[in-house]
Length: 252
Image 1 (cartoon, helix red, strand yellow):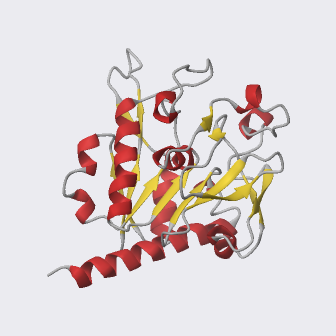
Image 2 (cartoon, one colour):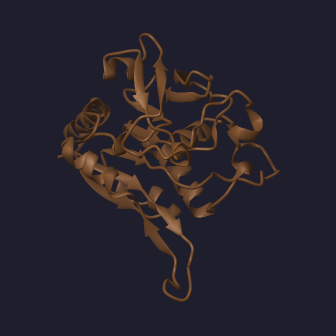
Image 3 (cartoon, helix red, strand yellow):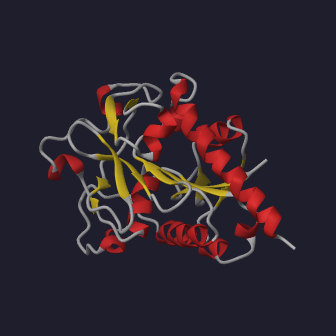
């Protein structure tokens, strides 16, 4: 069973009941991986994890959603008023994880923030705030409209011939949306493989790799109500299984 490392968020203390920092992850990520045949393991935001021996045993990396990436990571010194929850340790771990996973030819799946982090790791940039920077944007924070998280709120149009289109078996997929930032300039080597009707990037991938994919939506929340999203996790875990077999063959 392939082992999938999933990054987590860090919550600040909330005295007096919660006086300590806490790691947190929506359970749906682990459930989706397990349902697809993978074995999830949670990765706390400690940069040393990416340089230690753990990645010698992990078969795939899932970059989960969460708060915003520090703007200086993509060349901006000004922090927009809506940018929130910056955690340097998480940024650093995930950037190092991308580099280490690429060096080991491990599959990577980035979800929401994870899609943005993947782009930043390749030198790309982000819109710090969609509503104030893109006048024609859709409502990309569907909870503000009262749409449940396990239901879609808009379409994502997938590029013909892309890995995402191959996985979903279509060029239009209905997705949910919980983000105020988005990919602006794609990083070197990445292609945009999905967009919303307003042009916001919904999918990224690295054609030169077996499986390096970022999606701006949250498929883990829809695998039960909209089972077409199971295909993404199935493809990711299958790529991890291939990586696991390759490592086993190459291990003396």
